[in-house]
Image 1: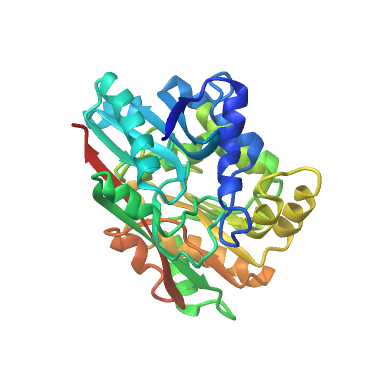
Image 2: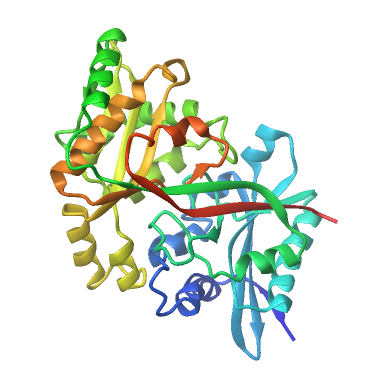
Amino acid sequence: MVEIKEVKTKSDIAKFVEYPNKLYKGNEYFVPFFSGDEKNKFDKDKNESYDDCIVKCFLAIRDKKIVGRIAGIIQKLHNEKTGEKRVRFSRFDCIDDEEVSYALFSAVEGWAKAQGMEIIHGPMGYNDLDREGMLIDGFDQMSTFEEQYNYEYYPKLVEAYGFKKEVDWVEYRIFTPKEENERIKHIADVVAKRYKLELVRPDNLKQFINDNKQEIFQVLDAAYSPLYGVVPMSDKVKDAVVAQFKLILNKDFIVCIKNEFGAIIAFGLVFPSLSESVNKSRGKILPFGIFRMLKQIKNPKSVDLGLIAIRPEYQNKGVNTLILSALIKGMIDKGVKYAETNLMLEYNNRIQTQWNVFNYVEHKKRRCYIKHID
């Protein structure tokens, strides 16, 4: 017998957040959230996304033990943008048991139906910078800090409830070349001269973020708006994103491209990979996790390709070569072995083909599922 309990108290939130750490205990590929940050995401007084979202969380309990969890998120901005009535399922984790997964999905679907929703899809988060997609291939690969790992039985449980594929993302591992690619450097020089562009790197990271964050988010909004699941972010959410990620940025892995008028038209950044340190620390920064994390930030073995964004009017003009050339040089200088691309939409050939000049492997694939609410 499975009991479904709605998450209401701070104690419930703590259990909800910690459950995956117990489910994946000892798993070498699982990378947890930072526990403190994740708890704040389910506190309406601390998560700015609650201005634009309606959230409901559930725990599955059997024999007085937690055996699963799930969150339902109605992203109002996404529904306004698309004209649809969708609910996202997020933070789905459970044991290999159809009765448990059925009870969890039924709880979200029943709540969503009462809210007037017509479609359920996921895994999706609060926004495009939250973890999304269910792993369907690459179960023997460590997740990046920006991704969610799941066991191989998860897709079976999801599909048993009636979900179908809506879209897939692919992921590459890009191996750092021994030296810079002369062809890319040449193209970058030609593009910069033709369009009067300047490559800018930060001297002081804090000052750089304060001076340029608004323009960078404007580029992000313009570049990513047409993509699947992307929603605009409020100023409060943007400030929260900056506060969360600035601690793990390395100024050597950030570049901006400005036009002749000094406006930012493109930028790229990669994150030093925190996967190993966060895995070992189980999402706890203190007391010892902070030392592992700082070590990986300063001298990373690998990096995660966070964001590459170009304003639409400058796309398909070779501007990406300026960014790639600069980021790859930084990786070579720092002795980085490889980069993880994170999620690329399966049909986004323009993004995928830019890596053809490098040695790479496609090693992971994720899926977003969809189901019409009965």
